[in-house]
Image 1 (cartoon, helix red, strand yellow):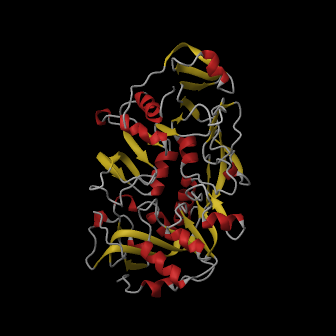
Image 2 (cartoon, one colour; image 1 turned 135 degrees about the vertical axis):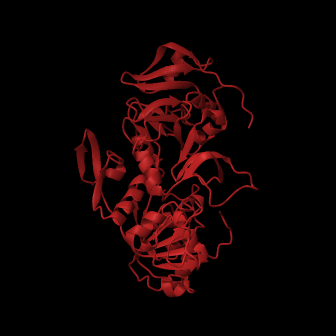
Length: 224
Length: 226
């Protein structure tokens, strides 16, 4: 068994630097904030105009004027600020966000990202802030399942789906591994104990190697 | 000077067929629902709407499309929720509505440029993607960029918290989103606010200065942020 979504998010949360500015995408990425203690002084940016998103609001405290980019009613942490969309995207495009954590359909060996257009027939596009974030953040990480439901690798030689941005992904957290995107292809830094190197190769399309100091990927049991 | 108006209908009647309308809102925050529901009743047609998202089938921006009032949508998020097609997606498939999909930062910067007298700008966002296709490109300081032109409109419909009679506006939390920039980019700006004040707002509470605002209408929303 691989990591579940919360465990993937937990693992990524361990690598965030204290005091950094982070933008979380929809789905698994937004779970990362559940595993960041307030003492770490991490500021979550939301592209609708918040720096300092706190936990989701309780029903009693919910304010329909205070939502994040995923439409969750949220709270603010001490020191948080609110601004308009132009200021928000100047913050993003100007490189003031340290890490953007996004979901993905595919990531290529050269770090190309495809995460906005699933190619479903007649469904209209939805790009939101994904391109801005992937191009402009200092660092882009992806959280995703290693394989699709029909066992295709989401790590690929070349993306088959429409690109979000080229050469932007630096690190991928999947249900079975933590992988860096290097000039030499995918490099597994951590791998769960139940998956062998050979199985990892079979489940990954595109060149993948194990780092010489590759260690076991572990996450605590998380009850939601 | 008093920009407050009793009747939204009288003001909204200025919106003629073929107008370009910018609509504030991100998620459910800051959507000018009072103005939109009255506009829907007035039913001008061939509108171009500039709006962040039309994913929600029950939202009023989507309702304008459903009511055959819209010929073009400029947005960042067009995909309807769920697996089936939204009414907008059906119209898109049938060629009844035109779509221009933009990265959110390009969307907001094009509006900002429109209000700030900047005809166009280069950005790396969108380069090498489907959304950059057909756009002029240039390598600037080692970065491949696409040229994006300013967006302007005839009318901005904005939702806010408080406004004074001069047209100075204050927002509640993330209700602000695209409101301040859309107001700068349109010939006529109509703001609906929960509270219309006779007294001027405290100077340092003003998030949208009066010069950008033409008319003020009282919002029918009761939910009161602070």
